[in-house]
Amino acid sequence: MAFAYSEKVMDHFTNPRNVGEIENCSGCGTVGNAQCGDIMRVYLDIDEDSRIRDVKFKTFGCGAAIATSSMATELVKGKTIQEALEVTNKAVMEALDGLPPVKVHCSLLAEEAIHAALWDYAERKGIVIEGLEKPKTDIHEHESEHERELELA
Ligand code: FES
Image (cartoon, rainbow, N blue to C red; front, side, top):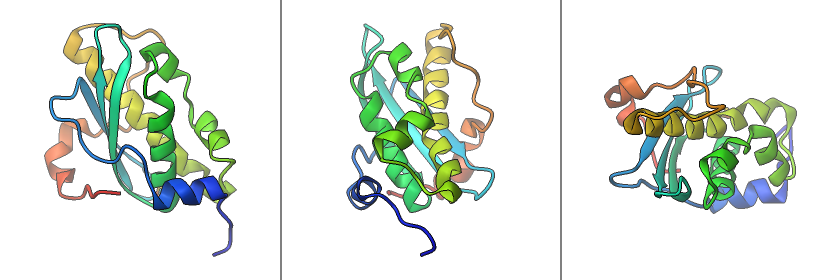
């Protein structure tokens, strides 16, 4: 390997947290990474106080994508929607003690999937979440096509 992962990245890659699905989720989002074709789906369970009660993910992707998905879900769990919006890919990378430069793009998948899930939640509720932009890579409309490509991390 031409680069080294931090211990935290290896920990979240080999023992990812929050893997799975949430039946009857409040919102879910699926995004793809244009650079490598990897896919991530996030499921959110949001309570009446706009707090993320639970979050699960599935990622078909590289080790960095799995580790950042795992850490990102840990960071948004229990947070309000507005607090979750502040969990950027940079914050996720910092929490993992960094990523090799060639793997920085992988961390975008988790941030975008969470935003896509929040967007889905807002659409279902008919509300506008301040500061949330429609995810560019949301492939929600084509879910059935990609369903078979999703694998457990
Ligand atoms: Fe595809 Fe990392 S190489 S997300």
